[in-house]
Length: 264
Image (tube, rainbow, N blue to C red; front, side, top):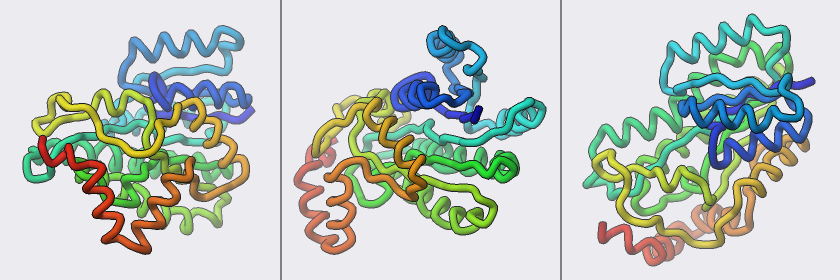
């Protein structure tokens, strides 16, 4: 039986990834900083086969907690086959109005945490010839008004793991980068505003809203096929191509669609 560890597993996409992994026969290690909800989710998932569900409360920005997690995994009788870096945070605020600590927080959760966790657990993944799945964002490929920190973090995430993929392929470790657009998940309802408090305006969006359950299914299918990158919908793929081939046109269209962000 293969084992997967998922961050941010108690809600949104993380929860759907956990359910999908369980359906695919994995032993699932759910981690999240919301201990109460995490315990409830683990009990819900483990009703049929509790031996295949484990949960550990984890703040992904806590280096000591990551070290403790690694040591705990090394003591287990099973191997770690897959790490899914799903935990994330975003903001909705103009760059000039955003407090620097907000940028630091977003970068810490969306880039530093998955990097630290992946490096820490890489020796285990090399032993199992396993893999890493990173939940990136279309915002990592192209600019989006009001998301300067988020775009920066997701862009850095993609670049880091594109390099890492080439470095660890010789060990049989596979890396999948996922680039969704707009998902119906708590990451947007919990978005930070310019001052670090919850954002007080609704998000702007283009294209259609995708369900996390649908994306979770696509993610595991792509990983089983050893894909390196997943653009879950045509809009995301088209927008990424447009940004590279005609960046000025993309910028004009984006500013028109997200004009409300300039009023915040």
